[in-house]
Length: 315
Image (cartoon, rainbow, N blue to C red):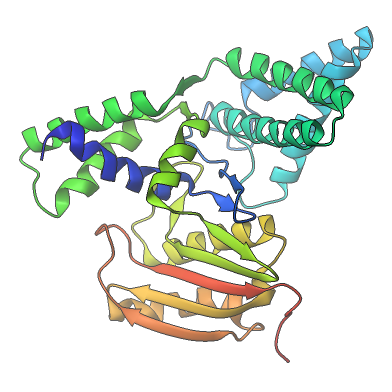
């Protein structure tokens, strides 16, 4: 298969492993805030430079009484504060740009709703906020990549992997590692991914009535695009990813009624039991565990769940 054609399934694997979307309805998809990340300081608690810059912008907007800009900046600060209370706080400019893009997506959805309601005043307000958010993304200093640029990186990675003698089953894993390395410190434009995700018919989670169906999820850290070699750590990250998808869908792990585990190595089960007990010990969902090979050798577990809003935990 030619490298240009090979890039499509590899782009699928890359997009799904890095930031599969959450579909809140049959017609709406929301992308995950996840991109490759890069640390600017050895101190993990040091705020990213862009956040510092925006705090300065906030003070300037307050002095100038610039209401639209002030509203946007307060939204960014609020979203950053909310993220700081989760397992994935904002620590890099790349992550902050991803958060800003998520706010842009919300504003774009608000524009569509306002247009449908004939509220031109609200359309103008939201478009103004989108313009300000665009300004901050453009001035972030973070390089943004679209679908065409990602495909070019994949083609280059394919040729490099083949040139290094990688073939067969190991090829995809080698290519993904090379592409993730090339994306280090860059922002992947989620708008370029939605069309591709539509082509492969994939969503992180789907809501139907009161039911939430979360797709098979692996242990990639969506902020870094990396995956631990340790099965315990992979399982913990997998559950953190599922927890986030459920919360974005308005549900929670405590409302999971069905879970399916896929383990390539049955001998790993004793190592992951403490993680499963931590997340599901009080929930006690119906469960199935299967031993099967996963798409990449580096994946040591995959978990999919079904939750029913309002189900709560079993007694």
